[in-house]
Image 1 (cartoon, rainbow, N blue to C red):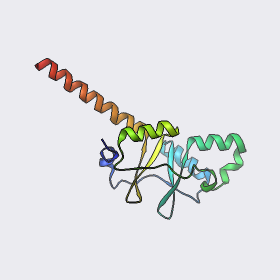
Image 2: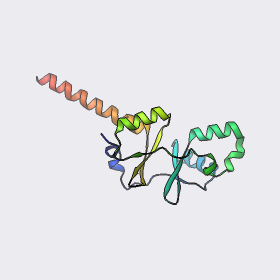
Image 3: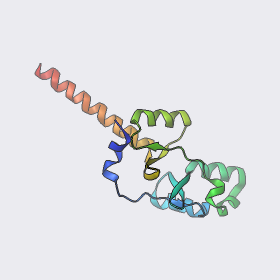
Image 4: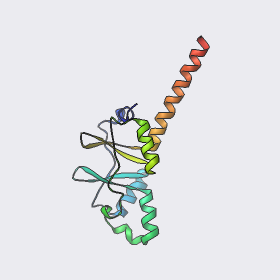
Length: 143
């Protein structure tokens, strides 16, 4: 199954993001307001990085609150690791595990079309396993 399957209901929905010139303080406020863990960082319509809760923790621990006034270009994780809509869900899960990341921009024809989390992938995978188990139970009961 591909990433396109997970995002099919999201097509055309706005992805919450930040501009690369936004300050870390502005991005932290957005994460808190939207109750999310990460945002893609954009410049001129292209994704150039990802800003996450981990970036906040590491920068605050190393630099103190002065880092809150720095632009995201100085504090984001870049370059972003991305997947295509045609990527397999299991490949994306393996990539996230291997790279120890929790969010991926989804690309199609060079443009970001969605932003997915490891939770999105695990939920889809769990739903599929439950569906298969139910189908097997029904098969066994009717055999």
